[in-house]
Image 1 (tube, helix red, strand yellow):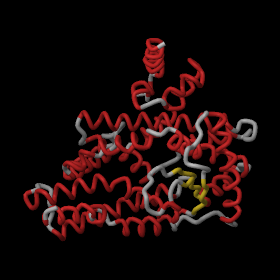
Image 2 (tube, one colour):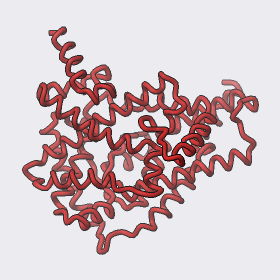
Image 3 (cartoon, helix red, strand yellow):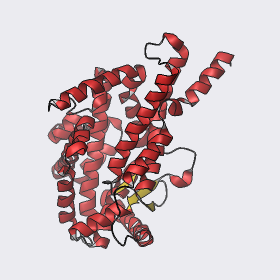
Image 4 (cartoon, one colour):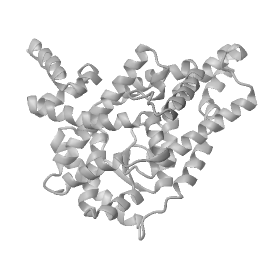
Length: 381
């Protein structure tokens, strides 16, 4: 390997830290999230005991209801506070974005100062800090609302901190207290949703790599020229100040994407709609006999998604999160329509391979997916 190649490799390895100040992101998020007090009398150890038991029970119920059985062993529950969730997600976002950031750094290294978006060192430092600050504020806001999460981004490092089903204890207890939810019922219901996501990614062997490939394709415009994203962000802010939404479907990245990249973004949206809709249907069905309050839990959470005002509402519109919330409902409609048309056996075909996944158009028109898949099945019979 040449000396230039060695230097290039060093620069690519440092891409994640050179373009985003991850430590600042974590510090800001932890500080801001910490301003929201936890519920009175919150006891983490009680939740840890409950969720360890209920996550195991949820895994059995989900496997029975869906036919999906994890190939990665038993699910592990971890109860955390908001700061702990932030730290886990800073690491997760860093793992997700590192390939894109490495491409940016590689292009800078290969083209040197001739690259049109290269910045003087002081300006680059400011951009790195600004990125860290923005990410930190976003994670701080999300940390006050998230209840549970399965982190599908796995690496060879820190295995004990991966493949975990997270529960944000203070948020769970706050919601239970506010609405008078029976804790055991609500916690089992919540566990079934997150365990369903783990089953989807650990029981379907091709799904994780397919998802990450789509993310990489969708972020390609940012890697190709980061200036385009900054320009799009400025335009979007102007539109939002005029009470117009420039990103109803694809978020900010969609403003700078090519048709091919928009295809990848729409494929991600369709996949997430399917996974969330499948999770919602499963959580209501799998524990029906043990969670009589499931209908009320679901109604409250749907209403809660809409109860956002002020700067947080602005942030939702900017990132396209409002569209994402609609996709949850669209995904649930897709799953229920398909099962009504052909039972759970027809729905199982979505896990057979990427070609069987519904497009965003088919998510919104499930009859089109049924016609396509049913026709293919008939032709092969």
